[in-house]
Length: 225
Image (cartoon, rainbow, N blue to C red; front, side, top):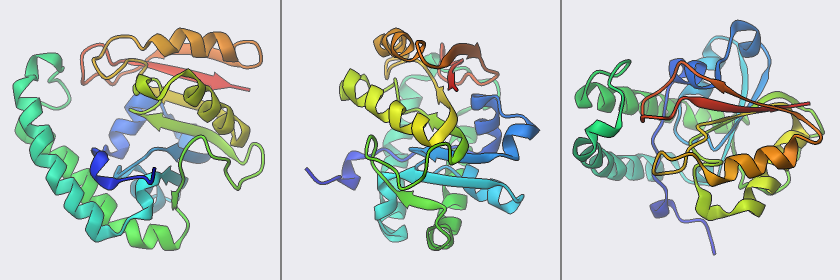
């Protein structure tokens, strides 16, 4: 079945959030980074402005700026209503309230949209669906990042996650996956299975992050060579 934009909930985060989610230091930010499932995050845009090297991959990059703008606006209304009904499930520390949340998310996505067409032309936003093979050679990237996708969407199944991470590890020297909970903010049943699979050939660790917005969403899985 063809990928449908109306099945996607685009919800972008900014560079500051990426730094806290993935424990990125200045040395990390100077390396070649791949973002898997980046969606409408403005991390790529902000990194490019400061001279960094980031290529983002996502199925939504097959669509036009106009299509994405329309879908983002549709999602904004739905997500903000859901957030208002479930505020107790979140930690209102770095983001203080619903108004600030909406401003932060929409600012990030508008910044992404302002960079989208230029970034596509420069090869920074690349249409790709995991676990399909990338065109890049082994170890092309230093770090691969996956935010709010792998481990979270458990319905995609064990085989999908193993195949996706295997291909990510082919083109990246290290991958970082955040968070390690499912869509209900419970520890993903896939986490232990994924660790058992990869620990035979890679260094695998779970580390705590400074980022926690949804309660319990403060751990990062790192798999490296």
